[in-house]
Image (tube, rainbow, N blue to C red; front, top):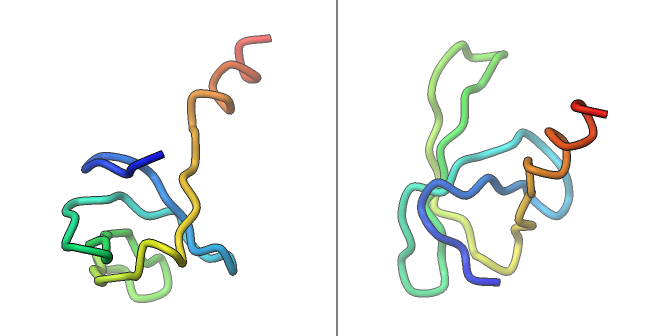
Length: 64
């Protein structure tokens, strides 16, 4: 599945949920809110290091 801006992702090794804001060749520009730094963070991350997170599955479970 190809990522698109607005998708939610997470590093395969774990960490915070991040939002895709741009795609650059084999890398993905992501932003996330850092609770420890109380700031909005941004990084360019290799796409191979990311897992797509489907939040729709979580919302469906909450409705049951």
